[in-house]
Image 1 (cartoon, helix red, strand yellow):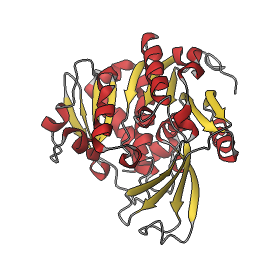
Image 2 (cartoon, helix red, strand yellow; image 1 turned 135 degrees about the vertical axis):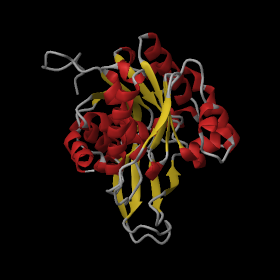
Image 3 (spheres, helix red, strand yellow; image 1 turned 90 degrees about the vertical axis):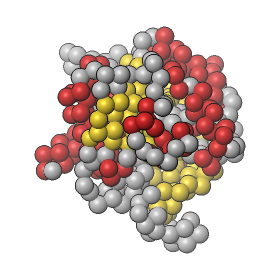
Image 4 (cartoon, helix red, strand yellow; image 1 turned 30 degrees about the vertical axis):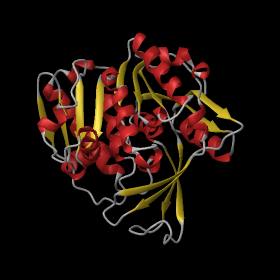
Length: 331
């Protein structure tokens, strides 16, 4: 897909670039069973940064994905899915010597997930600093990333370089740690590496589970959340699942309620939330400083997250703007 500076409209859309992993999630066809008990699996494209890129595009924003995939059928399929969703793919490479990552995701009866990963190593782990599309990174108005790409070299160095290039070019840095403990050598290593880039981010989103993990405090309250604040931060978000989200800026903080839906699979809900919020921020940074605007943006983001839980798999469940507005107006 050709990379263009905008589109045919008078006002080009500002670009949101996501960096990291894209993979195949295998989701049991029956909820509430272990992997061994599952009678079959539904193949679904996934990977948090890629989910965010597609979430942005589905909502009418402009997004790109930067990462590495195996030069295999799954890798080519994933790029086709990005292209079908109008995501810029100029930052993607294929590795002929490594496979595209796979994840088996068990859905418990409450809709929450357990993971088993196949990455030994997978192609996403092998992206090198020298392979980055620097021109693409320099055009980002928001650069979004997680922590999985920090686990091993060479991808860690590529991740750090990409952050540096985007920041120097004036991008806002958006960080969702997306904790996946089975991938890390130890919980201590996960915590250390996640926090190693904490103070570079302008926007950080953590889940309630991640808040507990990073603070070592099982109480989800303002004091615990604000212990993660750093002076350069513009917005800290804590997502609370069916209880909505909390937000913190240097001037104000509060909570926004969730939408009531019948949850089938929570995979991708946080990515949908993030993509929606970034869409609201990318062209108007004043959202970060105006509480009324921010609450409206978070209401929209909560609706996106809610809709995503009503279908199995992440990317197939990501909503369009009209679906989101329908939920908001009907609530």
